[in-house]
Length: 166
Ligand code: FES
Ligand code: FES
Picture (tube, protein in one colour):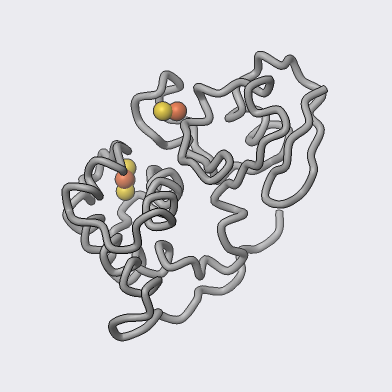
């Protein structure tokens, strides 16, 4: 039994402790916003926050996540109103969207520790791969999200409707 906190809720997983956190989240907790891309730590599609740090959930076992606080894209906001989510939409930094949850989690972690990152810092802190090539828009989106977090600029764009329950 592995006990951790997921999106603010205590969760127990009755799975092999060697199971990657990614599969516990997707298959047992039905948190399918966290994506499986490569499974070997290259793409970042599976990025979640663990104790506030962006980590690839395909590389962390349940045993390693024991007792830690995990946040997935579903836990970042209920209505997609997190500044990064608002800015990604406003800057149209989403094409097919497969990489988007992982990118949002990397960006959220970056802005939590530095709300005014330079372009080089953004590129270094968001190693996620995007096969659609949203990178230039992504940089603008992260900078826009930083302005929202700092209370600067034109202000946040309206939140999208709540995500429907499964
Ligand atoms: Fe985890 Fe690609 S699925 S890094
Ligand atoms: Fe398609 Fe990034 S938007 S992979």
